[in-house]
Length: 224
Image (tube, rainbow, N blue to C red):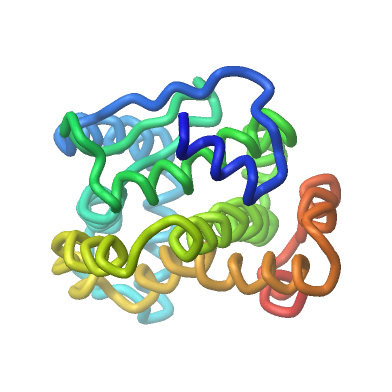
């Protein structure tokens, strides 16, 4: 697969076993998200109470429904670290530039899982919200930097413009409370800044080392 070959060249990690993408409709995505969110319902309700108490959510807000709607709108692909399956939220026979970029991002997650077992790493910090957010920033920041480099190296200016035009409706995101927007953006924006700092101050191996000794707080992400 040409996309995977390019990702391997950018990231410097060879696949240890085959990675075969699958396609999922947005309706199937919503059903999958419901299952995941319902597993975390107690934590979501606790967060909802805290956020309402400190004034970051309206008193009549339903955080569960907000998250379901937001993720359903925003997710264009994902890699399931538990089943080790990669999904693109499409149903087209021919990949669009946005699909290609999504695959580049998600292939990076597959390589992270194969080399660093990010599933086990994530499970080890699931009771520590700061460490969990910091690890998510490393994982997503790494994939985002690969995605950006892929776009610069392999997509034409016309394809980049098509991606921006094909980004879809963001009305739910635009209408979401500030705290939810920032929570969604943080792993990608701040995570990418952290990974770029590691890369430009050393080399790719410094990023690999970060998985063996991950950041333990959002402070460390913002000030690597």
